[in-house]
Amino acid sequence: MNGNCSTTGCKKPERLPDAAALERQWKSIDWKKAEAEVNRLQARIAKATKEKKWNTVKRLQYLLTHSYYGKALAVRKITTNKGKNTSGVDKELWSTPASKMRGVLTLTDKNYKAKPLRRVLIEKKGKKAKRPLGIPCMYDRAMQALYALALDPVAETTANTKSFGFRKGRSCHDACEYIFTALSRKNCAEWVLEGDIKGCFDHISHEWLIDNIPMDKSVLKQFLKAGFIFENELFPTDDGTPQGGVISPILANMALDGIQKILSDRFHTNRLGKVDNRYQIANKVYLVRYADDFIVTAATKEIAEEAKELIREFLKTRGLELSEEKTTITHVGDGFDMLGWTFRKFKGKLIVKPSKKSIKSFVASLSETILKRGKAWKQELLIEKLNEQIRGWTNYHQSVCASEAFAHIDYVLFELLWRWAKRRHPHKSRWWVSTNYWHKKGNRSWVFSTENKELLRADHIPIVRHTKVRMDANPYFDTQYFLDRKFQHGMKRLSGRFKLIWKNQNGRCYHCGMPMEISDEREIFFKVPKSAGGKDEVNNMAYVHKSCQQIYLECCSKE
Image 1 (cartoon, rainbow, N blue to C red):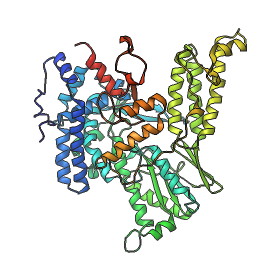
Image 2: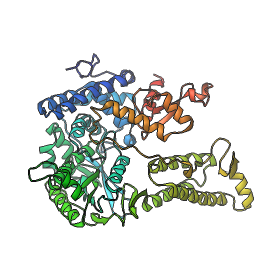
Image 3: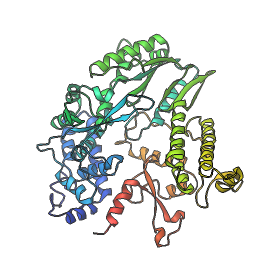
C-alpha cells in the first residue's frame, strides 16, 4: 500500500483530541497532492478493468476506499456541493473544518450501517406529480462519494460509447452533436424512437445491482436497503437507487449500458456475429442516451418498433419498463424534443434550436425574478441577478441555432423591466422612467444600466459550435486529450478580459492548480483584495473553483 494514500501510513493521527487540532489538520491538507494520488489509483483501476483483471480491480478499489486522501476528497465533495446545507434524518451538517476532519477520520466500512434517507417531494416541470428525493445523512453521503471514486473508473471503462449523462468529460452538448451527426445528412434515418424509462432510479432491481456491480457487496447493500423516512414513518426500500444519492447516477448508468450492445447485435451484425457496414447503412439504427432519456434512429417505422421491443425485454431483466406515454416513434419531419432542444428537418436540413418548453420555462424564471423576488431590489442588484440567469441560459444554448430565441428573450426582458420600473414609479412620466433606468452606452441606446452595471443582451452572445467528444475517449487514459479539450472550451466560450484570464491561467484553478471545466461553478479571485487597494484588472484577477475559494476562506480564517 502506498504510504501517501493509506489511512495508516500517512503519518497523521487517525483521531485528534480537540476541535482546534482537527481544524489545523483539515487546513493543512495538500489538495493538489490528494487529487494526484487518487487519480493515480483510479487510472490503475481503469487499466485493470480494461484488461478484465477483476481481482486487481477489487484490490485497488479497497486501497482507494481505505486511503486518507480518498476520504478527504469524498468529504470535500459533499461539503462544497449544492446540498451541503441540507441535512439528513440526523439533522447533522459538516459545516466547520473540525467537523469535516472528524468525518474524514471516522469514515470506515467496519460495521457500517447506513441510516434511512429523508424523503422529500420536489416538483416536476409542467406536472402535478412530484418527484421523490432521498437525502442521506452526511456520513452516508461521504461513504457514497468515497465508493463512487472507486467505482467510476470501472463505469467509464465499460460504458457505452453513446452514453453522455453523468459522465466525466461528457455533456448534453456532446449528445446533441451526435444526434445531429446521425440525422443531418440527406440519406440518414427518417424515424426516431424517443425513449423514456418509467421511474428509472426508483425501480432498478436490487438483485441485479448486487449481482453485477463490481464493488464491495456489503456496502452496496447498505446503500440500497437503507429505507427512508417520510412524515415520521419508516419505509423499506425493496428496489431502486435513491435520487439524491451521490453514487446513484453511476449505478443507473451501469444498469443501462447494455442497450447499445443488444441493438448492435440485432441490427449491425451478420449471421457470423460480426459487425457489417452494409447492415449499419441499411438499418440506420443508432443510440444516443443521456441518463434515462434516449433516442434510437431507424430507417423505417417497423425497425423502430422492433428496437422498442428489444429495449423493453432488456429493461425487464433489470426491473425497469418503458413509459408508454413518453415513448413515441416520430418522423424527423415532425421533430422531437430532447435535453431542452428541438430537432427537426426542414426540406432535408436538420435544424436544432431551443425548445418552446425551455424558452417558456426561462421566461417564467425571469418574470419571477423581476416582478416577484426583485420588485423591491435596487437596480444594480437586479442587473446582477438577471445577468447570472441570462449568462447561464445562453451558455447552454449558444451551440445551436438560437439567434431568434435570444432576440425573443431580449424583447421579453424589456417588457418585464418596463413593468418593473413603471410599478415603482406610478406617478412618473414615461420619459422620466426611461431616462432614469435606461441610458446610452457607446453606440447603444436604451441600455438598462447603472454607473457600474449593465444588463447583458442575449442577442450579443455569439453562436459557437460545440466540438463533440471522441467516442472511444476515456478520461482515465486520455488525460491530455481531455485537458486540451477543457482549455479549448473555455477559449471558445469566454470573451474579452475573461478570456485573457482563462488563457493566462491555462484553464487551471488559481488555488488548487487543477484543470477547470467551463461549466464548473467558479468565481473571480482578486490576488490583491480590493479592500487592500487591489484593482479590477486582468493581472489581479484569477478564476478559482467555488469549492476551492470556500476552502481558501476557511484557511484564511482566524485560528
